[in-house]
Image 1 (cartoon, rainbow, N blue to C red):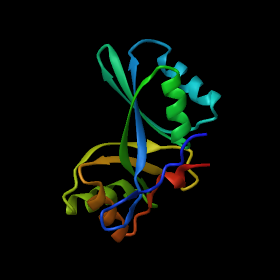
Image 2 (spheres, rainbow, N blue to C red):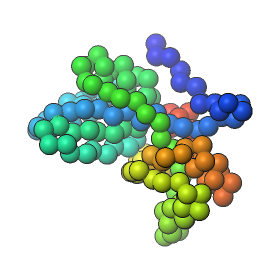
Image 3 (cartoon, rainbow, N blue to C red):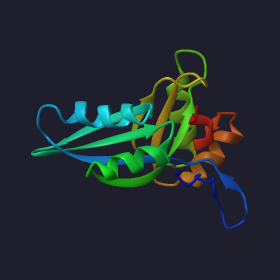
Image 4 (tube, one colour):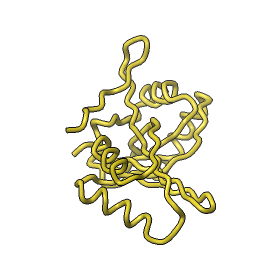
Length: 157
């Protein structure tokens, strides 16, 4: 059985709702994404978000799952090279300016967004995965402005 992942905690004892993102390194050739998704499907792991970056002969696929521990175990067992990092997941508010509002709040806090991609199939509604240069500042700023920042436990199910 996979180990349950606990929320990250700051030195001051505050829980920081970060989400683990898994980067998978693939050969840039036909069928690799199918193989990856079949392995996850066999373990009943749902892909909630995916972003692929071409790197010539290879590709880096960034993924967010509903069951990260199970996904990691299956991918490693299948021989994939993986890297785990932490990202922020923020729920998009209503209206056509939802993303613009997030970017404005982060700009006021001088937080840089390295990359972002949408998450799908969440009961919380439309969300964005954000890789930022200062997660704690970004989360604090977003929460103070009433944005919902989701933790890994919010993605399960």
